[in-house]
Length: 328
Image 1 (cartoon, one colour):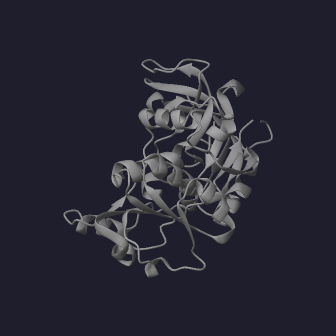
Image 2: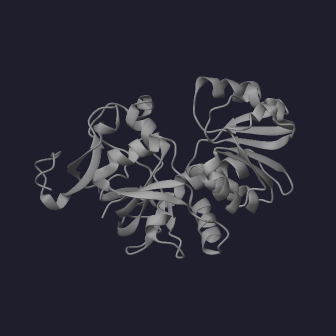
Image 3: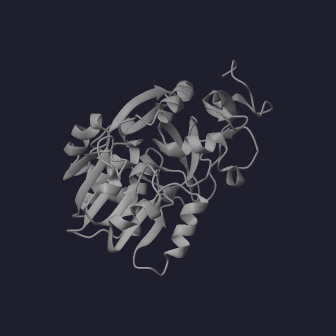
């Protein structure tokens, strides 16, 4: 680590770790490797030796500074939320043990996952699925919990209902299609032509190529619309909802906050999913994966020091499923 920029130079080398940080908000080139102080777990936390990290659009948004009201201006800043690795130390009150292989999401606006170690609240983690590689498990937490919370908790999808998923081939979308089917829904999925086969394999009952069909021209009505890409407004798609239908959005904005507020007492409602990592949900996802009911789609992996390239690829919005960083 001697060749890396040093933060915390007065610490012993054993108290340091390798991480990818930013020193200011901006483009992918802001991401760089550094040697930073290794975290120490506090009460209820475990120290995880990170093996793999899932890359999410949220990481890109944080890097650009769009959440800086919450993430602040104290640098260097370690970003990233999805984590998979091994517990190497448990703080008082933590209910995971040294040696446990775990996966989860760090409930923090910036996250701290792009590093060799992370101190994480044990309730934000669960034992990793055993039927898939740890690399693949790192792709699950944020995206799959977003889909689960949007469909099961916000839209309250029931068996036999009709669900529209816009952005069905992306990181969240591939889980949303499968979770909607597990919940018993009839699924109409929206993606590009090149991803129609993938989304069909994941269980969609109908797939719409958005380059050929405008959603506003559809005659169907849906009990739930999950706008994963967030490129529509509630007003635009409201006509596609059943009288008690729910529209769920993923991207915070003044517009969606207004839509949520003004539809709070209406039968057709707009909601914003703000994902939180919960042990119960991670356990449920693990059970689905290990039972073969859910497939995890990883587009490609990058070494940790190629985090800028991983972000550039994410920003093309052409990833099929998830992108993963290998910490090593």
